[in-house]
Length: 378
Image (cartoon, rainbow, N blue to C red):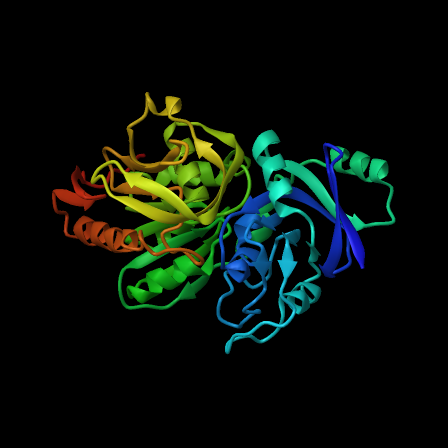
């Protein structure tokens, strides 16, 4: 059945529909990964977005029971050049088409995804709508332009109530901003006892758990739309060792006094090179974000840039010069993508261990960094 993608600038792509036949609007973005579509579909950071896969053939290994990054996908649509309708993989439990139907997510195939990607790269991220071919384009455009970007995305995907993932090691409080389960898996692998808390948890509840460390997770949307989390982080810095990923990285920067801005089309894919300024090492990373910390805003803060993106020079990592706190913009847990930076979880463990032992120095990002005594105020 023919369906269409209508962009807010009036561009129309006509293709074949798959998955659900519902009509949904969203921010149209592109992902450059060759594989990992199941993790992408279930990544809460894609909440409200329509994702275009730049690799032409998608769906060839189906959908399995193991590779989900969340229970309920929050994506608003998937666009592919060619859909594989007969997947071949021993783990496959259903086709991509069947999965999207089950989750009521529309898909569109057979369009020129290269052209769509070039439009986004040239003009920036655009709003769009996957809808019936019978609808009038002008009417659809008016509807799209009248719609505002969702500012409550984190509240949609964050845990609604606390829960525990048992372990016998360090006690880690995870502030769930839209967590990929890969983060929890990496901490569990290292024996951590994890307490997952909603994004709007109050400071007293966090401190009552007496955590050895705080994990700030990934999540969707504009970090400035989550003032509760910014205030919480501001009051945690200096009290407890802290590690932030993606949205957690941006919120950490805002909490310390830096600023963020929307990127033209963001970073989404599993092939983004990042340089560690402390060691000179270059890693290939998995990324999914549409906002970045601005370098100019760091001048009057106690933050130091530790990593930069080699493609555009944007900030990919920060550390606090006074307290045991560091963050990265990319995804060290991958899922999907390369595991070049998986060792950052080990460094987080090391920081917690040395903080508990009250040692003077902590090795962060390959250099010796001052680990001052825990302060009562951020």
